[in-house]
Image (cartoon, rainbow, N blue to C red; front, side, top):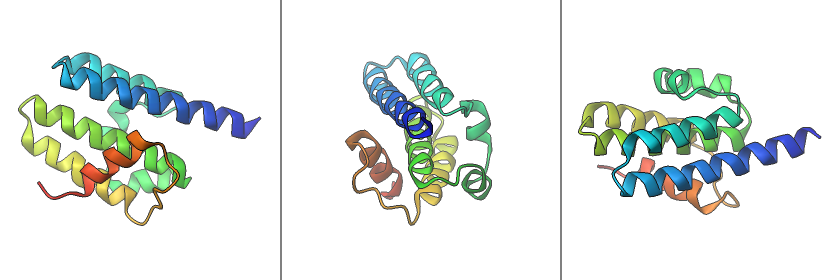
Length: 125
């Protein structure tokens, strides 16, 4: 039962990432952020809380590697949204946080949108 709930939450967050990327490309940044927030809500993690916590605190809060990768991917996409909104300093902070959170995680086997987001977070700007 617990695994089913986790898999459903993972699926919802992956769908939210895909929606957020599509909405960002359409320049609908508020809707993209809302999609991310809904996806993270499936994991029981509010976007506003995650955006304000440092990587070490997040790693302690989200210890499961799969969930940690998902949260890092969501933060990486949020960084892209902030950059698109003309907030480069905030974007840089979020991107660094996402990269630190994902550091050491094996991303093989994770859904492609998660791997892509994590790859962007790890690339230098």
